[in-house]
Amino acid sequence: MIIVRNLWKRYGKLQVLKGLELDVNDGETVVILGRSGVGKSVLLRQLIGIEKPDDGYVEVNGIRVTHINLNANVEVMRHMGMLFQSSALFDSMPIGDNVSFYLKQHYPKLSPEEVKERVSHALDLVGLAGTEEKMPSDLSGGMRKRAALARVIVYRPSLILYDEPTTGLDPITAMQINELINKTKKELNATSIVVTHDMRSALEVGDRLAFHHEGKILHIAPKDEFLKIDDPLLHAFFKNASVSMSEGLTNG
Image (tube, helix red, strand yellow):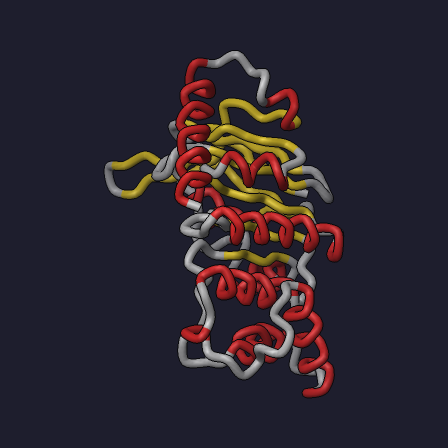
């Protein structure tokens, strides 16, 4: 479904992506691991077409999203969804309006009854049935994350991108988000890319794991094989991840 070739991206003097390459198969979940600040989220912005690379290309379902105009990109994005790290809900809108926003903007032929039914179904899938009239400020961090996921799945995209979906959540809530990612994949038969530095989450949701380091994907493999890769950089990441997991268990 996704082909990334020789992707380069610079911000001023900072070179973030350095010839990155990646293939993602239809229907699988690929987790991209790496330390914070190495450019994992930058890659997602290239994939969804929010930003353009300096060189290289991204191909989604045979279409080079890095080489098309805005109108064509909007059409491609109808089949893509992204769960942002901050949830990115509209604070001034109740949850029902947040979830229905995309449908009302891009599917004008849907009747109000159909929109209401889809919103109700999406909220039910993420365990937030009956919250249509609540405001984002009424919800906990984990509930806001689930509402943001409902806003994505309401239009049933075939590709979902997750940007640090468990960051800032307690271990129990993070586990619930992991379960929802797996549930959403089965419900929609979706291809997913999850960007995270949370090793526990990676093992829960990933079919293949990839290690992003200094602007490139150094390793990618099925998770059982990934854990056996002999690389000092990867060992150091695993060690730090294990410390973070232990701290989370202690604090939880």
